[in-house]
Image 1 (cartoon, one colour):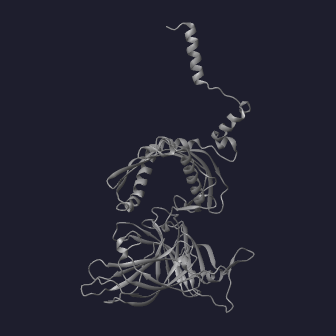
Image 2 (cartoon, helix red, strand yellow):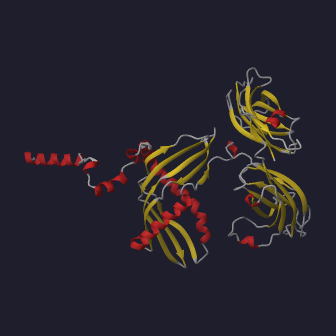
Image 3 (cartoon, one colour):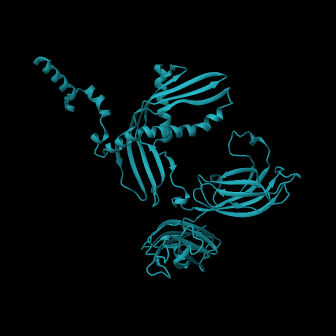
Length: 518
């Protein structure tokens, strides 16, 4: 048993272990204060930052699973990159030895949320990560094994994250835009062949500074890395900005794919970033130098990033059509309203390391013209209504009719209510998705129709229907329809109205229609 002195000593020791010594900041000397300030969370130092301990607790509990998921994604993403180097420079194989981000997750030191602008949300978190990561890459070069190890990664980041555009489709934003507000602080250990390269003082400081500098150059605000979240099916893509006119003229010296030394070529084409059906030329039978002189039109949404994909095929009556070659044309190469002729060398694929690309597959000649929509064809009057600015001769050219089917209210079927909307214009029929078991569906889907002249004499037919799956009879039912005259759309540039559905007791539909000219 302990005597009284021993008990007092034990209690004093326990008290010292449980009650740390706390001093006011004013009692600290300048050196200690300077060393302490960076470790104080931003939500303490600045009233603009919010405390989000709940987020750190959530990430901590989820980290063992996040670690495995992130590492698996890293392996899948780097596998094609590793394969590109195998067989070059004497490299026989490259693979991960160990890959773990460690037991400690990143922590949020605070977060600042800016006032929401139109259809976007801006936040600035401060992230610190003292990682115990261990990444080992094993490479075999000329039968000699080389091991590279990255460990103890420490990162301090202050990014700006913008969610835009905000849309009524989960997860409710179309793009994630990230940029850095300050130069990042990065520290790590790097071992090559078992030796710690970062132990060399001059090299250590140089590598840290260069990595931070290069990351800052690439991503420091206002430079932005944009990550698309939603695809075209969500209705969250960019709005049309013009029309691309494509003239497929001819091809030269195509490959001989048929038994008799001929091919039956045709061209398929589409714009990147779209889920619309491919457009095709006619098939030229038994011809290695076919001439088409056929015209096609595409709606352009982002001329800076979109490309025109052109694929040449050899038509077959029974088996799968053989691919003769392909090529792409970035739209950024075009000058608005000016036609440009392209003579394209066909390749097997767009992979620059594909050895089959060296084979001569012939040439394809096309002519492209990009006609942007007129920025001055819409003006606002004193009441906020839009009006079309006519040309001096009083005529308008063709353009694009944009039909947005937003939602319906109080629709009801006799047998079932699984509503979808069907849009009919000049024989072209387009449909929204089916929403099951609701009388107030919300679609928020946009459809596009290209026309050669203003549709002043046309009507657009929109019908709400109900569809039940799996039934061969009575699986569709009309819930009401509306016919909309387009003369007001052409004259005003835009309408945004709710319409009572014909043949429906109380049903209504909300539709927005725009007319853009070129």
